[in-house]
Image 1 (cartoon, rainbow over the protein chains, first blue to last red):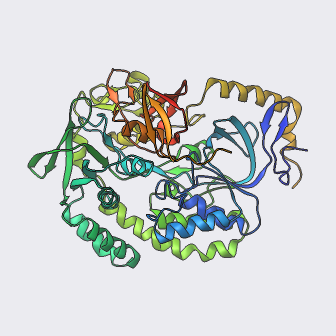
Image 2 (image 1 turned 180 degrees about the vertical axis):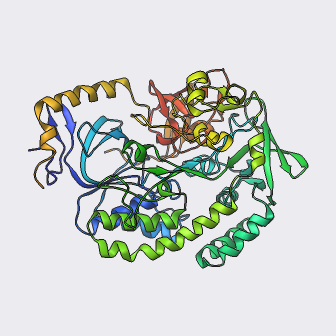
Image 3 (image 1 turned 180 degrees about the horizontal axis):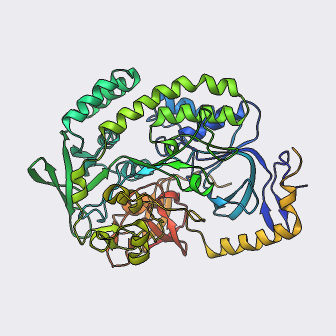
Length: 456
Length: 84
């Protein structure tokens, strides 16, 4: 059996090296974009495998809906059902940490160790993470992301009777406040940094998206009685070993709001590490793709948030296009393009209305931690002129999160673009790396490298 | 195959707690009333932030294995969890 044979479903062990059978279409990420891509790609009968580091499919937005919880929206339930029946296989708890030792292969880590998965075509649907901006007290325990607290609540954290301040920017604030309230939390205030004018402008755009209006109306009824303050932001958080109160600012007016939890996030930042590692061209903060979601690297497609923050509907459209295109169903891919254009217009409106205000740049004080892994304060990097010098001289971004949190923050605070990515893109054990090193030298000598290139 | 249990028993920093199956270790730690998951390099208490496996602030030792992202690990019967 050759490890490159795509017909073989079992993994083959070649001199101890765990090189799996080649898959036709490998998809990284089982969120909306990855699931939609898998459903489309599998319609052509291709062998499709989806990798995700979470325990189940759904991504962050549809997290924990594996059991088809009653909280799931109709669309989420429909997609999860479709995904399960698609014939694509999900490898959950599997984190793609880099490129494999041979061309067109992935390095996948799970509780069982690392393995190499060769592929014909690759779809990167790596999603996004929240944008966190540093302010005094943001490192206190019980300060969570907005998506963060929802993710924790969905995975078992009880928020019942907890006093929660929800702050930052974007429609997610409303969705999460409603979720928390439904689960028994006392949401004392929603502090939206965008101005009233920006929100009014956004509402006018919303009129062209009826499904979004009905979502907004539903949310409004769930949020009755909770003050929604625009042009308002959290200046600082304080407490003894955990957050106990926050200082909120609205124009020149300030007040202190006691709380058990602070949920704060300033929108999203695409997860670009893997696309960058595979050599996809990235402009500003998005992977460049063509009309078929093809990146600048042959046989590597990209869909969803990495091509630009756009939300779930755009991610689904892009995922479907990428899946059809990768499976060679070009007509079907092209038929989805108008939907993508429509949701791109929505994304542009979102970006315009909820861009973080300049005042947020003056929140960090000299002793405010910016890099949470290495405890690098704002005072130590404020005078630095580049991301590189902040790394070299202050160890900023050199800890286990590899700059995923402070990098996007410094992009906003200092205008620094992030630098090149080095594998592994997530911390792994030395044991895993040694095993891999041994494997790749075995591969070079023993021939699986050639075997992976068996005639099509 | 183990039958689906009604609850899972685990130990968080020496304290025995019972959680529903499917709950992540991060949620279990917070449910146990413990807010500091780890101590930072300058001795500050830190807790879960992103809830989605990115920030690494929620890393703990699970069954003797250090630096596990507690927000991505589901609780299992008999797990021993220690903050770092």
